[in-house]
Image (cartoon, rainbow, N blue to C red; front, side, top):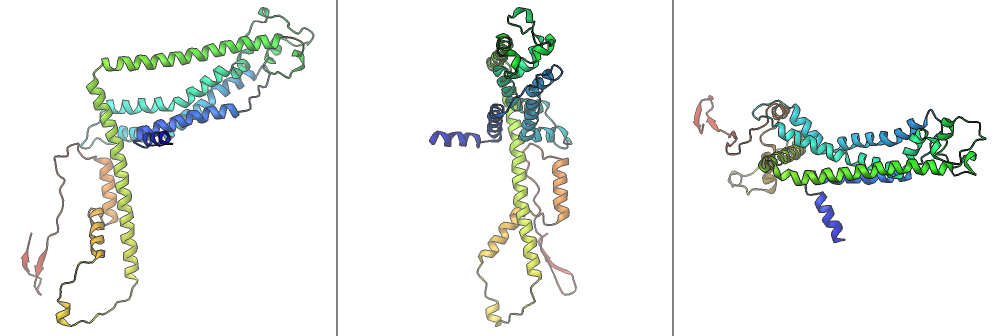
Length: 333
């Protein structure tokens, strides 16, 4: 149970871990889908190769597109690539890092599907049984009246009556399946070698550039997430304020008469006033629809400069006291 908690904490630690978890889950789903898939080769010379290659490569394309769709780095990369420059320059290395990470994670489930189909061999036998030279096998049925191409096309069908008393079908199927498994193991070995070589060779290059690229790619992801969370909080407080104003506006006017001495007594601060002040702080002074639209437009058009030493300008409230004629008596401007 503790190990399961540790695994869940790892996958919830950051967006990269969540993406890894989702891609691993897609890979497991692809294996489950293949094992539950009812594979039925048509055993017709014109359709065998189309069906076999279709089952081998069409689901991986769907899984790849699904992996690109659910990968959070896809949106971050596209936003960084297409945004206006504004006050912040674009770093092509960061965009390449996000793109390579997205492609690597999205290719996991398709590669698992292709490897499983090759190691199983059914799709390969269905697609390429007609390309076998029958002279290398004995026990060819001669009394079927079929052409050799059509006879080889029926090799994937175990229940066909023409192969009941001969070992020809099993021999051809075993031969083609050996090729399929050899290709599958070769691809798996090649992928492992590429991963090992990449891991060993990577420190030989400029490690500082790699750290900088990874840092700023994580920064873009975290910045976008924090902006979305802040917008959600602002929208909640903005909606709460609008609803409260609506209900307050529906009340009738009431007159409260108090003695003068009691009216001048300073009221203690109530909890509602603290909550209103806290809501005002979360609204950041953006209290109208035009301000919200301008803020969102400015965020897209001109991202803030990456320099936290420059404090943002904070407008302050200025109070001016006027007499009955509208002339300023005192002002703190």
